[in-house]
Image (spheres, rainbow, N blue to C red):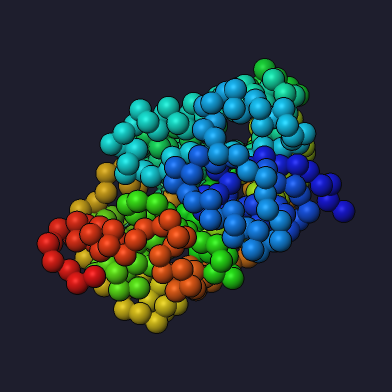
Length: 363
Ligand code: UD1
């Protein structure tokens, strides 16, 4: 029987955070959420309650607000922290790198300070496959040397190193960094899913809008990569698998001293055009695509070797690409406007016109 833990989830109303809250509650853990709602909506927590019957205690807070953060730690007897809260758009990070360093690194150091002050010594950190950079064309293992290619990836790699150093000099501390590949999909119910605020950065939210007829076509960023069809290859992983991986991490965070690092991926590579085909199948809609220039900071192939986590915890992913597309489409059809504070149809249509570089597109 699993020990019930009190888990503080920073960024708990975001895409991965909210799915993780559901998985933690369903596994019997108590959840406390901190979020500043900068890229998420409180509605996500209402939906966590819809699915679990439990409302997580939550605080609206920027983690860099040290007195505010201390207050949360003073009120609760926290066993483990899962730290998601961060800015996460690769393209945007090349435009405003200092914001990425300030938020992503600043939130992490503030959190480490307050955890230390309150004697909370267990941390699960949301890292990213992006730290591997323009890596070898083979499944990446945790021992491959990181080489970030953009400020977002640099911020994640820097945080990993800071946490690792912290565990070295504070041996009472134990941490796990999960480097996930590309999380997509949605909760099977369609109640929770990916509902970004503002402009769309990632491929799946875009595809959902194209299939819904709100954007004319997916802009495929580059068809001259050294891959089978020339488009970039990623290791897409179902968000529910990522959430379950965090529950496993919480339950194994005591296993070994220091910091452990694990990939969360499937080991299967999918190109942008293959993803379009899979989504067209799942949605029964046509997906038009337009080949564009490569996106700054992108790499050709990122596929993870998932064996280390399987050997350590006996944990592996359960869902394939069809399930990811099916669940994402289900969320889209049930929530055409995302959460209520999500992207409005007008904004989506305007974004579509801007993205394809034309003035008139029927919404
Ligand atoms: C990036 C990070 C990943 C992180 C994720 C979070 C890298 C290499 N990866 O994923 O670690 O978890 O952000 O946001 O830094 N694409 C299009 N058209 C679009 C959008 C995307 O063709 O409109 C292509 C991209 O070029 C890429 C793939 O689709 O090849 C996936 O892109 P995206 O969903 O943005 O994720 P990554 O940039 O791979």
